Image (cartoon, rainbow, N blue to C red; front, side, top):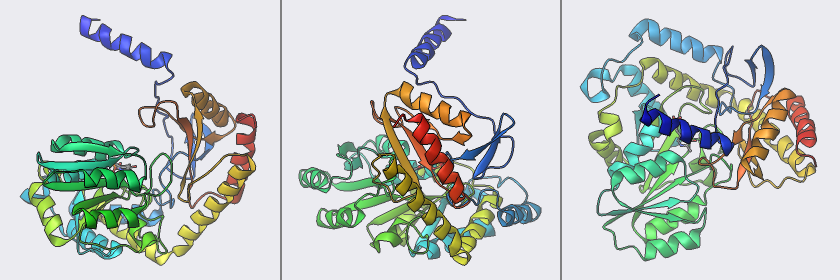
Length: 386
Ligand SMILES: *Cc1c(COP(=O)(O)O)cnc(C)c1O
């Protein structure tokens, strides 16, 4: 091992001493509410496949048809020659789905947020970022070279004070709509009012809201009944919608600007046409089968009741429910005990969450049965020592 390798080995040892090493589990069958790992079947409370669509036969069939017709790779960036009829239809369909004028298909949610924030903000801008925002909003703000001003989590007063003090030429407020590790909602109506008062963009990351929030599963904007030319919405296809990729949506000028300027759009190969076909079919299913969302909501209500019974406080009405344990080792230990009992629940540790707030993160899916929730609650009672 060379000198450079030895430094990394020492850094890796330090991660291990702090119970921060992460491992991958090898899935031996399709993603779903139950998964096979190491020959065992586990109830899966780790996935973001909230509507249990990732292995749906109709999504598989849509992918097969697209592969037959368009092949596998899209061959180039969308602006060169990678934008197919399927990509175009997915964009139109998504704009209609969320009730915004225009949408643009990005290679991933990570790429979308980098592209959105870094092209709306520049050197003369200020980006206001919730303290618990997802890593890719934070990275987008850094990439933009704007001044970055974090505000206290979901705190409208703190956001207003910071907006009022801003002297920047352009202001961008960026937030998760449903926070990925807490499951709580950003106060979007109040945030939009502040963006109007202080002339700012509102970038809304609905990775965990699309398909889950709102009467018809159209996301957090539907949940709050919000529409505004100041909003640029980002929603991923890899979570409730069961596929891969992401959309940005908003006013025609904002989306045209992203198409012309977002580097993660311009300099990256278009998604495989198959991913666009899967998105179209997933949106159709969300519309046609409201019972999936109803089942997810029923499981959410059951879990909330069970957690209250265990004395665990829960502020989440989404599919994501944290149990904050504090120490990294405690979260890891609880996760391991749960797995031994047949439940896959990840231990989420820093830097994904703030220091001292390591947690179990339970995510629910439409395909879970009531007895899965009952089983999980019983196992938790044993593992948490309550
Ligand atoms: C998963 C996630 C992303 C990234 O989306 P990908 O399509 O997986 O790259 C962005 N924001 C939030 C809040 C997420 O949870």
